[in-house]
Length: 453
Image (tube, rainbow, N blue to C red; front, side):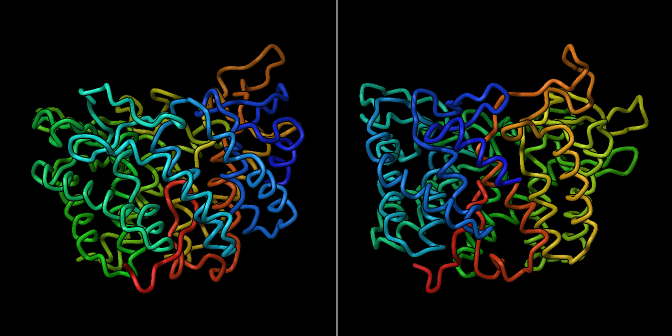
């Protein structure tokens, strides 16, 4: 599957950010206006892990010859996305190969982001101009999204570790200090004021899905990255999860399915009876954290329950692939049903959780669930030159030939994350052992640091 996806990209979109496999054209993806090889950067550590070393060398050569000049363009990019994909992907390749070219490119990319932190309290803005940095004429920076400014820690700490430059570490330590100081009853809202380093209201939008998700992931994974010495991060993670559960975001459907909804605190209504595919990642994090929790059995059970709920969103779809979001419909016995976005956008979060729980529990059912998903991908998402998403996993939307409507883009994270997790779940646990590696939120493995700075 990886070779098929990569070959289509090489054939039709080499050097572009992504591929549109159906039309056979390059696709600019989230970094519109650039041609900076996003799929190359996102794919290299997956190719390396799979032993496809000739392909790795092709990608490395393109980066060496093109990336620096292609980044010298006046285009706004997401600080969050650029960090997890470019900085994270290049750091991962340095960690895996010890080849200094990857480290140097990672530093180049990280330094492109540094002007984003030039705000009143060091909370980075969401977007940065790759060539000119921050527009200093702005004095009202608005709100920052928790999952964006809170998902820099792993990459920036590793940067300080390998360069000896503490400026990266200091930036993310400041973020942690500011956001934890501002929490409301242990809760972290999805939107945070850059100007004041406070929440604008005590009524917070709290979610483990979009706008919240990877902040909580990085709290726990910072503890793992530190060689289990950053006990402050571990406490923050467990305190946050306890507050989320106390606030009522953890729900149980009438049919016994446990899930995390979204809620505005301070309001009387319950959490939304909807879970996002993005939030399915939390099962894996909870599973990894179980051995450090006060009640290991109950914590691991919650992780497995979340994994099962997300599995239900897959098996109850006609395609066997889960939607972007799903609801619990009380009129239909509280079954998982279509709700909101019924498309499949090639996301990895469900198989991510299945992979981590497979490593933690040794239960073979997670491999079996992944195999069912692989067969569904080949049946509904494979096209001549790659893989694509679906407009409707329930197969209610078809083209003139009666085929399911497809999205003409091969997301780079499909190769960085989805295929990596699907590959690793069937491999020996010594390959990228969880005792030695921590995966960033784009599934780029970074090493556990000994000694930790």
